[in-house]
Amino acid sequence: MTSEIIAADPTLHYSTDEHAPDDWQSETTSLASAIYRGLVENGRRYQTLRPNGSHVPSDDQMFETYEASHLLALIMDLEEENPFFRSPVGKDPKHILDIGTGTGSWAIDVADLFPNATVRGVDLFPPPVSWIPPNCLLEVDDILQPWTWRDEFDLVHLRLLDSAFTPVETDHLYKQCYDHIKSGGWIEQLEMSSFIECDDDSVPEDSLLWSWGPRFTLVADKAGKPLGIMRTFRESIEKAGFEDIHTKEYKWPIGAWPKDKGYKEAGAVNFQHWLSGMEGYGMWLLTKFGDPVPWTKEEVQVYVAKMRKELSNPRFHAYHRARRIWARKPLHGVDITAEPSS
Ligand SMILES: C[S@@+](CC[C@H](N)C(=O)[O-])C[C@H]1O[C@@H](n2cnc3c(N)ncnc32)[C@H](O)[C@@H]1O
Image 1 (cartoon, rainbow, N blue to C red):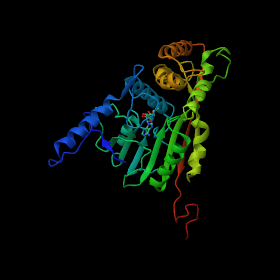
Image 2: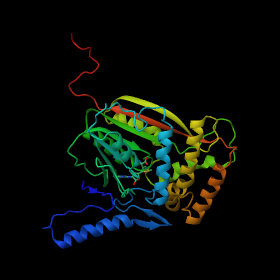
Image 3: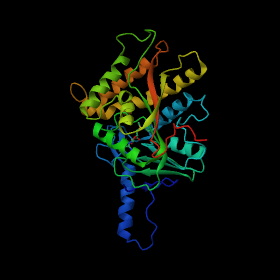
Image 4: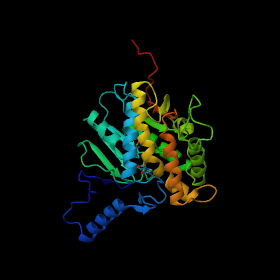
């Protein structure tokens, strides 16, 4: 795994070794700018570091979506002293990793919260940052490559990675997490369902909203990157060898329809999350694997526009589920359940 570290400007760092040959530097520089350019298709920009690595764009509209989901996750845990994670890592963790960091906001906020920790965020595309705390390192890399960090992590965090990996890649990723988390350290993951639900029949049976989850399950399966991580990630974490597994369930409202002030605020933010995110989540999958035949860009845009219109209906009390799981790597050689000897 060769990491590119993002500077605050944001420009990819390359060697400042004055003896390095010029052609090496220019190769590295053009590699960096090629990474920033990405691949533009159907009006959206995609990462180019890993071929078929992510079917979700890495562009301003998607970053806006990630900012909304970051805020949403925080609002839904505002009653917690630490709304960023539940893992009991103590007051002085040293090494934290955020996989698929997107805008890097989680890594940056956690670095602010734990100034003595080194917090790394890794993504296939450079996060759109202009300033990061000195103890935060945002790296452009493919997390499926062998990890070369020397320090073991107190905590590895993953969020909103549904359909990012094939089943084989998923197993490989959790194994890497296990191998690089210190004994007694934690893994934590927050995921959301793409299936829209409603408890009071306010969303009519013929509403397009019901089609979103099943449609994307179908096309993501065709793409070989299954959707539905909510059903599987507990098992994957357990299979990798983690124990002491905890779960927290959420209902994330879409729209400001709930009476409760906190949920209303969450719903308003989630509404923006869906509005700005649907095209990006759908464009690549539907234009490549759309059912029964690949869709055109315009067909995707019309579908998304209709979804937006329905979601804007204040009478529809729509929500989707989310789940947080945190689990510990066994403490080798120490039985923490044993009574202290007197
Ligand atoms: C839906 S976004 C979630 C971003 C962030 N975790 C958050 O919650 O805001 C998924 C991210 O995973 C990244 N990703 C997908 N495959 C990856 C890989 N092999 N290595 C590193 N990042 C990856 C994508 O580039 C994208 O930014």
